[in-house]
Amino acid sequence: MKNLDRYNIGALLLSCLFAALIYFVGYQTPRESFNQFILLYMASFAIFYMIWLNRQSWSFKAFLILAILVRLILLMAVPELSNDFYRFIWDGEMINMGINPYAHTPNELISQGPIYSEMYLRMLYHGMGDLSAGNYSCYPVVNQLFFFVPTYLFDSIGANVISFKIIMILADVGVMVIGRKILIHLNKSPHFIWLYALNPFVIFEFTGNLHFEGVMILFILTTIYLVMTGRWLFGAVFFGMAIQIKLIPFMLLPFLYKRLKVIPAIGFTALTGVIVIAFGLILINGQMLDNFMQSIDLYFETFEFNASFIYLLREYSMAKVGYNELFYYGPLLSKIAAISILALAVFRSYRSEEDIFKGMLFAMVIYYLCATTVHPWYISLVLIFSVFTTYKFGLVWSLVIMLSYFAYSQPDFQENLFLVSVEYILVGLVLIVEILRKTKMDNFGLNFKSFFTLKNE
Image 1 (cartoon, rainbow, N blue to C red):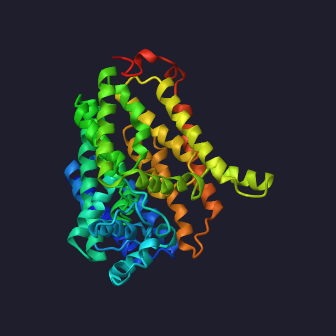
Image 2: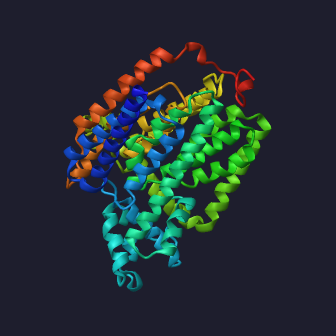
Image 3: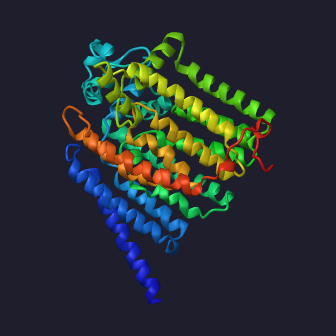
């Protein structure tokens, strides 16, 4: 009994300390105070991991309550580490005004009388920053619908932020529930989902900074669970919606085929395409599609942030020709990533459903190592897929990627390449060690006959 009381008191103290650290990051840490932020974040991560190590003394319900409560702490906090939410609200307000968010950039609209005369809209315009204001919206249609609903109800930045936070919290709760179902299906402990759901990285990036990757992950996991349990028709609907949140789930399609026979795979692909096109037709026509893709292309040809291979190639091109050849190397690396991911799907043997998650995990690693822009919240897919495997480099990445926020504390958004190097060296070392320990050479081989199903079926 004394040991049990000691566990309960210790768990309560750790929970309170964890909640306090979440509060101080959310309310007392401006983006300019990088040292304060990174120290508080690392402390919260340490407490989170201590709670995780003592998981046997926690029930799933107790973990769920804690995960919800620490998110509710941030309900009233204005995002400090990202100003994307201003663009979210702007796009929603444009739809409410009957203006297609893919038709005009904010710079083109702000001078118009009905918009310029509204102080609320001017605040959104100035809040989103010059980069966002000068480009067309890059958010797919289902994402736009999530922007539209709160802005239809409220003409207040604060009210819309709170509405977005509620959406994020509900999505995270959904991930906890469906993640638990998947872990049970895989004969793993349901507590592994807390490596994602209690991770301060997830709490800050989704509830704190309002990135809709959390909603996308809910749709992806729902798709995977439905496919694994034989309900691929419903899975295709959720997969189509996931793509219409962010385009990146497209790359996961070959791995879903591993759980489908040939005819269901064709049906799944066709229905997914119908869902994507149906939602797209709500807002996108030929010209709007060109505008949308113009903004997407910026992530391959113009933008650079927290990258790995592309930074090495940048240094090489600067030494060789005297200027940055991003316009060439960016698209080249994206093609290399696409070919490598397809090869991973074709040549790797998939003996179990866990292997499908491993395939998706390494597909995301390949993609982000070849990407020109890797914002912290991007690697949330790496983290969630790692939860269903024995690989833990995703957990390490969720800790060290926050070093990239140093750039956000600088007036000129200048990165510290030493910190970027530390991030990738640490993640790379853990990744290499885990691959050497856990990868068997007989996991690879070309077998078209079993491409559309698991090898042991």
